[in-house]
Image 1 (cartoon, rainbow, N blue to C red):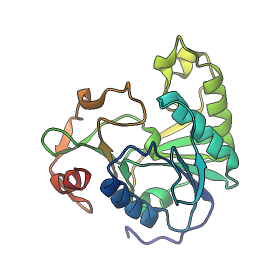
Image 2 (image 1 turned 180 degrees about the horizontal axis):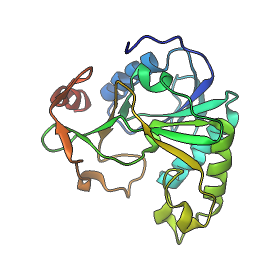
Image 3 (image 1 turned 180 degrees about the vertical axis):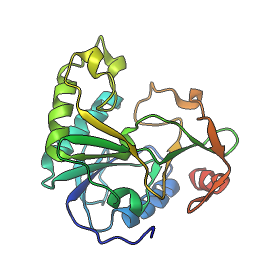
Length: 230
């Protein structure tokens, strides 16, 4: 049954924020996040101090590359067998953090992720691509994979900055075991906005996925979530 789990504290959630979201939405998202993360360790990485688990300060440049640098930094502070990501613009369900643990050599992404843009007509859509925001992985395997990937990134190939599991061939690094066949019963909602981690990101040029909905179970109407953001 959805929502009924015995939580085992084998997981540390790495919560990443650039402290750019409207205060009301930030409070709304963190309330939902804490309900989803109940029973697990949390390490938060923020540009300004926040009271969320063990907080460390990110003093790097705002960029997608730095986001992965900070994620690696936090993973090395964790002590649990597994880590998962938590991003400040995602509404997570308790199912997401508890429904699955991969083998120790496999990095996985929960594909139950609906995208919701804060511009245009409020509408959920599904994009079939992996996203760092739904990462669940064995900690040591992920540290090894991310260290290798970061070691190959430099100023001339920053277009390959992305999740572990993308662009490994282009960077000439090891192809890890990646599981992208996982779907939590209750999806996560990725609230896309123009002021994200990287000031040079696509912003409002992003496109919706092919599967669309105005309302979905558990989360309700898209327009109500967008109102929380605005």
